[in-house]
Length: 145
Image: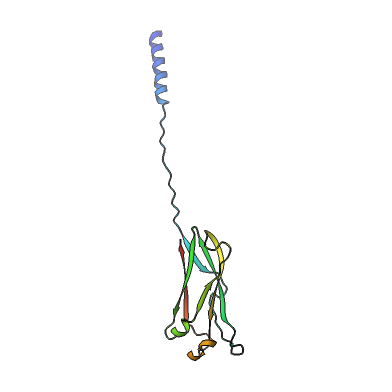
């Protein structure tokens, strides 16, 4: 009987040892953060108001609007002027300048100025334009490099 109990206890120890065996599996973790770029108007009025002053006709007609660029990659910003029907001649004279700011073009968030200028005095032959006339839209495009 002692012998049977001894054999049973050895079998029990072996059974517990078999249950204690472990196994591991490694599962890789992949992360995807797609590139994103975003541009928004960061200005109170958000429009270019180009007002010609007949009292100072040789002064530059210009206005500045601040834009906010947000990106997790390097980027570039470009602009295009889209004329409103009937004002193509005036719209084609608009020059848009994008001012560089600290961090501009690099990943992160940056506010930068854009300035629209128009040579009215040199093109006065194009006629009058009533106040608050919408002559064009400037489309800014932000693109990842």
